Length: 433
View 1: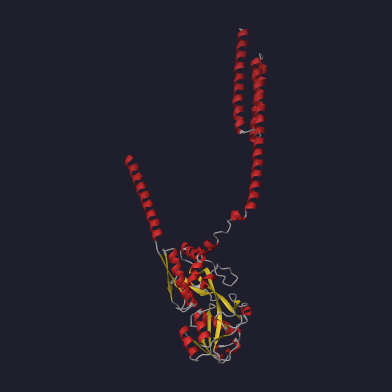
View 2: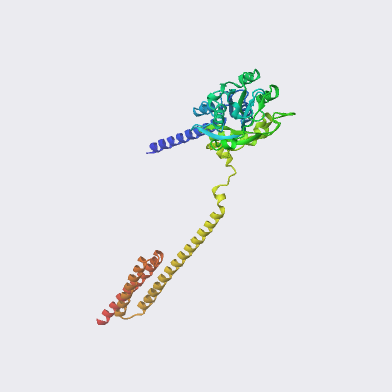
């Protein structure tokens, strides 16, 4: 038997030690773990790619356990597909490009604007005048390419109304300089260096896109915006006036399966170090939490949600007044119930005390009686009292504790009756003899 107990104790100790060692190893490994993430960033030289590189640098500086690598891609649509298949864990994307189920929102990065640059000789002064012209479009697979066709559809322009070529930014700039195309369409942040070069050095001219509010009816991610006068040059100003256009947010997305703590940390670093980010890329000044007014409508990643809700009052804080009221009501109700219970118990005890007093009087009468008939009458009274008390116990008019006290007194009384009856009978027999 002792051997079996020793074996059980030994196994228990071994299992406990193994569990402690395992948990300790897990905690140590988790603390030392390096998270390697990839971010789909668009084409090299673009705003998103540069922004992604800056994000990678600043995040790794503030948390060396998170290492991010910027991956060159064709654009927003390709980024979302890579994110869906987990080939990348983070992605930048235009807010107007449809996402896939694995995509979750992390942050708004900056507003992109529709920018249509035309040559001086093109004769183009508005979007409708693109008909019959040669247009350089962004590469296939990018959000910019899709955005152009949304714009064209709004102005009732079909693909057969003009000649177009999808090409890289470098190819489009070269074709523009060589007068091989009449216009270039881009979705870029205001102040983009490539567009600045076209309008400053190669005679490019920005034209207005003035129906953003109307386009928002079908494309909720679109917002009316102005490219400020002088955004690309101060003297003479380019553009010469505030130029209406369409804005769409550039967003940072994450795969929903990425560790929530990692995404929370990234979100916190972006939100709390905007000034540091802005010294490397001024667009970082626009970093903001999603507000759902720009038509994104995408669920937040759990990690980002945790960060954004950090100062949100808890349920108890938010409903403190109501909870205090209910607590007061409950306490008052409990006090009333407790008082009622105490009163009832006191009433039960008083009834038991009343019957105990009757028993004491009957005991005294028993010892003072010299008649057997009187003793028998006292016995009948005791039986009647017992019957009454048992009935009241069933009806909860007397408590169990009071009944125990009554029982002790009643047994003393009935014993006194038996003793006194025996004594009187014995005395009576003696007199007869």
